[in-house]
Image (tube, rainbow, N blue to C red; front, side):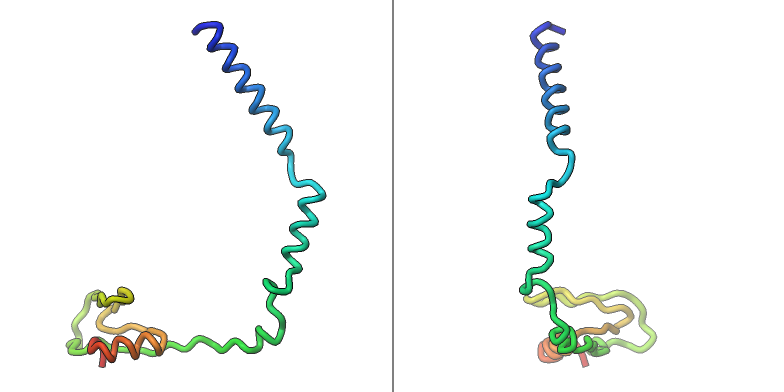
Length: 107
């Protein structure tokens, strides 16, 4: 190895050590910034918002024409997504079930 290359390797190692020493952890100014984000009223839900949430409801559906006793996986590909069924059955949000029903894929 040439002396010029060996010298540049040492410079790189020294620079890495210097960078690691300088990034020893968060400083006090960063702590204040973190606290301001954690206390932001726009990102922290209030108790009234938590109470307003409704539980998720799912609708059990069956593929149209699925034969009783038939087993397997099936997927329906339509413009807005891909929907998977196991043994002809699946559970979807009511809006999704209505979309599949209107498209003629489920009973």
